[in-house]
Image (cartoon, rainbow, N blue to C red; front, top):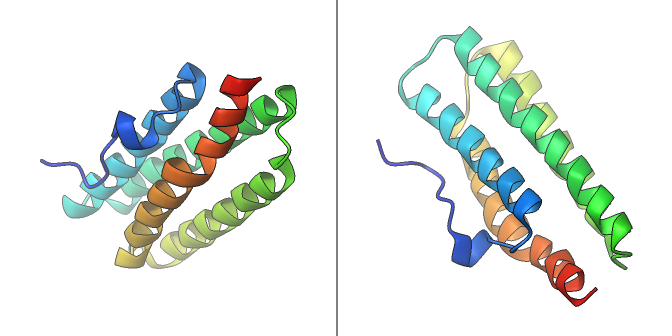
Length: 133
């Protein structure tokens, strides 16, 4: 089955191995959740996959924020705020799923936007700063 979300090193790669690993893991979790949804996996299985995506995201954001602090990234505060906003949306989708047992299409639209705007855009700023440091 073709993946819903693609890892593209030229678009998302930061040349910081730990961060790229975190991004690849998040994309893998997104694909796993999408594949489960397409295959009509049980609510328990989908819940486990959603939990894995949330855990990978929380862990990665924490790693990213630690790196930004280490390199003295000047825009760390607004970047942290973006992380909080992404997590809040993710938690809301997770609560909705727990209530309804349904993964709405707008969840996957949100994941796609997050992938392009955050990984493909905002994260490049701290990566540039890291390479310059």
